[in-house]
Image (cartoon, rainbow, N blue to C red; front, side, top):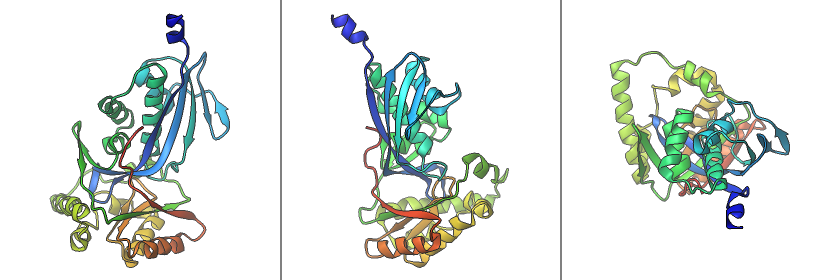
Length: 290
């Protein structure tokens, strides 16, 4: 009886948070986990089936969920139920969250408890974005490079306001807008801005965070792709935000503010969006996948 029970299909459940990558000059290296979550349920099945928002479909072999599950437990059919609160193609790390939650749920369905390191390596390989993968897996403010992940301190009195336009912007299109080379002076200014950003997020110091703004590496080349992104950043700063940046590849914007001006920043971003999106004051996800 024990053997039969062990062989019976089981249900695995896992969640993973949204994430905002880059945060300005920290291109492909920094990310912040945010409390919007993707929840996945996985159970072995006779054929592949994904159930999301009441729609059921058989995914293609190249589907991200299929590839995440295959990386986690090998090629075996699963039924995956997805409840995703993270807007897609908006620069909020939805793909990394889905891949993390699906892989972890599949492993649990097969009787294996995932480790942070294994999940991070799988998702970073699948997505090609170690910053989003690190935030989804480890939570908090993270730096990721060359397989090394470090949690970074974040000033407790900083609040996060996110402006999410209705428009979509694919990561592929955003990447294609970047120049093939970078001038030495731009690289030097970017390094200085990253130093200011990391220290400003640690201390919450207004002058330090102000010095971190104005990214030339990826934000400036993308301005024409999403004018609303630039406008949201300007509105947030005018209302008192200490720092505002593209969230990942956009079009969403992440702004950091003190509690005293948080509501003013949110209202300014809502006014800019009008009926073309939403604004959310989000908690930092101190825990990554669960």
